[in-house]
Length: 352
Ligand code: PEP
Ligand code: MN
Image (tube, rainbow, N blue to C red; front, top):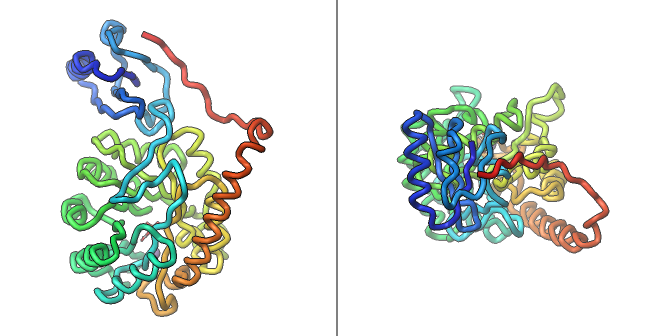
């Protein structure tokens, strides 16, 4: 059940948490963005436990992803260093698929920053299909990322693949990336839930919207509300594309969740010439940002060069992304009342 408690109702919060613990229910408390809190309880408490002063709302019927749902709170934003993801202008995180070396990472960081990116990416621990492919530089790669951040000011997002790596990666990174292949690695999700760093959660390439949001819920239920969802393409039967970017899911998520969403048109297409059009389509669909693979010499990148663009192409995408965002903002008033689309189901409110 989901219980909304007003600001200052500390005693009521404590009572609810105690009663839930007595019943053996897991709980997690999250700010609701209006000064109060929402408490997710992994079971139904009896009315005497919820009819308390300061309880604003009690939901017995709700989505299974309680904290990630729009029923819990309005639009959320995630801060990574000085960068805000969600709720405003779209942003870009960019960099090579893999960290390739110190000078290379510093050079590409400077170039993506000049092209308009506000966050730096690069894999130090790489999930490769072949055990014979480059597996990443490991901790050395994390050190190069951290040095590139010191020199450019760009916060760093990088992948963590194993629960026992979380502390090490969190030491160097500003945001922890959960890769597509690990979206349902629940021990890993629990650990990043406790790591105190924002998380970029990439969608499993065969996962449903609900499974995706349940993975976000794992992280949030373990104390970390700072989750950004990333659509990175799903598997289809068409061999023309490595993956198919599923843009349905962007408005699909916005209809049921408050979490920010970014789109990865690099993995989502597997073809560098598709990155620009699908970036713009993602922004038009309502994404809060883009995650793009960039390398000064894509043909010689150590991994994923075929889907990697140059810094010059990134600059073009940034300019057009801002134009699309502005055009949509300019037409918002004109469109109000015309679309008439209302896909959000109203939650069943059972007032205490
Ligand atoms: C990546 O972004 O570096 C990556 C490996 O992507 P995915 O997990 O989406 O395949
Ligand atoms: Mn890649």
